[in-house]
Length: 466
Image (tube, rainbow, N blue to C red; front, side, top):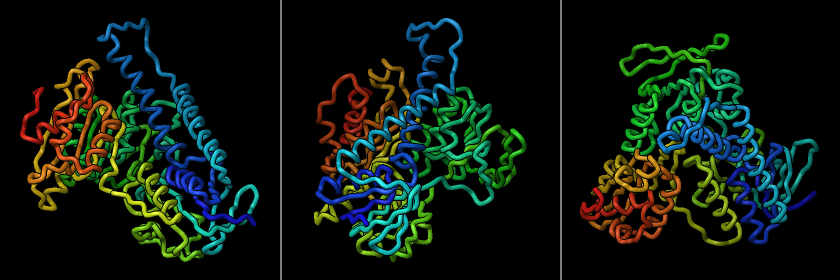
């Protein structure tokens, strides 16, 4: 039987990063993955493939709607070859997961394919093509999550689908009904809207992206309505039924009246739930909470002291980069170091166009906590760079403490917001004031100038270009 200092169950961003860091710290490391490719949901059927389709559909949308204005004339019809688009997406996935294989070999990490199941707190059985058992002084549970549904919905993976199936459709839907106005639903809804689908978004809450700052929700809603999405907020879905090639969704609107939506596909994107099937956690003395998450303390340690858990399977935001931070944190904890994660500074991103990104507190949270704050906001359309690229939608908003000027939250929607949010994370990590950021030189012309201008607006309402 092979023995290891650390075994990791699950090879998503949390698991494989934890494995690399453990190996870097001199530990003999194994990683267990039930699927034939490494990388988990994110690399195989999540973050990476969805970005590939978002980029491809964005190119098509630009070609159809904006090229002529740029002086680019393409004779004849511009057509979508969905099969080729999906194939390119898959090539991106294959290359990325292949990169994880390389990193495992480079760091001398043993990879086991199969379902990792606890025999006890120090032994794991692996059921795959061949069954095996390993011993591990420490184990990291990184089994991730899977799409949630609603109790009355039967997902047939043909017409009533999850994000996994939406990434490999054989045809462009005529009318895609999206249940859930969160990150996944909006991103995939935008892919198919660009490709020509009619898209209806049905959201239970009174706004889309309801966990983000209300200003971001309002602006993204405006952009989506302009793109002729049908946005149905404050709607409680009560039935989803398939009849042949048609899907019928019934919901109650905010007045309590029943409304009906008919489409040829329905994407159920109502969040994700922790995945622990086959783990046999109780055999190792590992407790789960009432929502199926692995219970952990402040060190991400489970009720079994030599077993840790990270990522989507524990409490907190279900984000790949949060899982990565936790993977490094646990590896360093096992090695006897004293790492730290500030969960307030883990950014959230929606990869629609315009992109939406945020870090820190929202206005709603600051009001609820009774914090005295000030706001500095700057519209993207006031930037030369935005006019040059015709990306005029959006704004940057900085929330700062009224007395100390420390930045408490940064919320942005606009071109390249996903990349720009890192500047806000750095500023807040070093507890910068709005004035600190306002006095830093930002290259001209760039989208990041909106951050400087919003900081100026927050400092003494002295933005320069508005």
